[in-house]
Image 1 (spheres, one colour):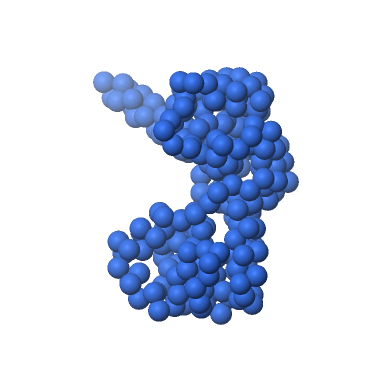
Image 2 (cartoon, one colour):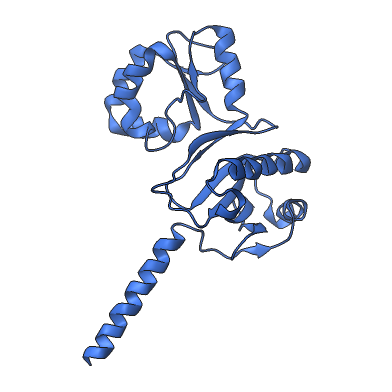
Length: 240
């Protein structure tokens, strides 16, 4: 009896270890189609259409990497811009972006308002002189969400209408790669982009990841593409 209990415990621990290794890799039915072109064609079939324009997501699962010790927090440029919801922490209102002025900061002391703000926007940009107060007021929520304005992309050294517009356009053509687990999910565009543009965005991300991962392509286990409401289709598999 004691041996049986010990075996059950060992099996349970083995399952737990396996689950930890997989991190948050999607446990969903995956359709296997070789190539990005074929995958996008499959996703555009009539049965996958919805009454809204779906996002196109790229899921990249990693291997042979300890993300706790070799974490990523960077941006990859895309050849084709995608519509993103962007807000700006600025000293004055801008026609180019939804503006959150310094006088508005006080209302975001309410945790509910803060969470709504974080969910509403994909990216935040900021005038450099405001960054101290932004970090104090918004850092506890935007930081963990990976949405704090960054020196790499998002902070405007000298605020002007032209600088704000330029930063907004820049943010439309980047994706932020921040690893907490061995599964990275990125929006590569909307389904109203042409297949050729979506393909080039996907390829740009995969090439970018190979450049920034410690062991390059060896760290990429597989890659899948999906629309908001579809199951994913595998487009790359380096499983060993």
